[in-house]
Image 1 (cartoon, rainbow, N blue to C red):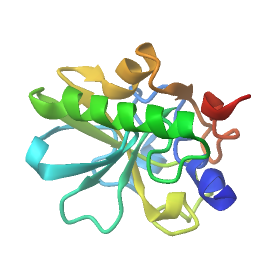
Image 2 (cartoon, helix red, strand yellow):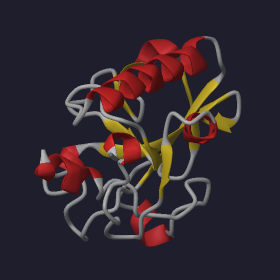
Image 3 (cartoon, rainbow, N blue to C red):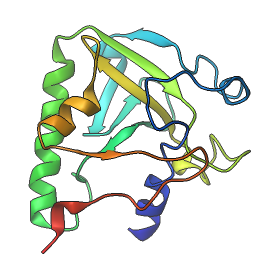
Image 4 (cartoon, rainbow, N blue to C red):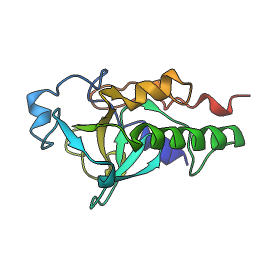
Length: 164
């Protein structure tokens, strides 16, 4: 579990604002980085409130800029309940919206992107529903918290759901 938290904390360091364009040196390492691409709802599944899996991808895509409670391995019942709500809300947001996905480099040490040493091999991106970042919506509704990283690492993953 601690390893999962540590790796999750490495997911979004490329930029503090997921709407910015990646630097040219990092963009070269990730085809299509920084470009909004249309995405059909049929082209992905939702893993939890902050992770999707594109059809045909070996690993998921971590949505950056926010963290939602875990719905798969929660640390407490409050996190489990909120995690299920965040996942359900993400499903609602993408159900009938015009969707766009912007892939961004993950917050990893140079040379590790795409490997298990970087975000469990997952890619990173921002998902927009009708032009609005889904993470911003989930944060505004209390179903997520902001999570901003640096270029090669992240602070500890914010997980306030199980605070006593």
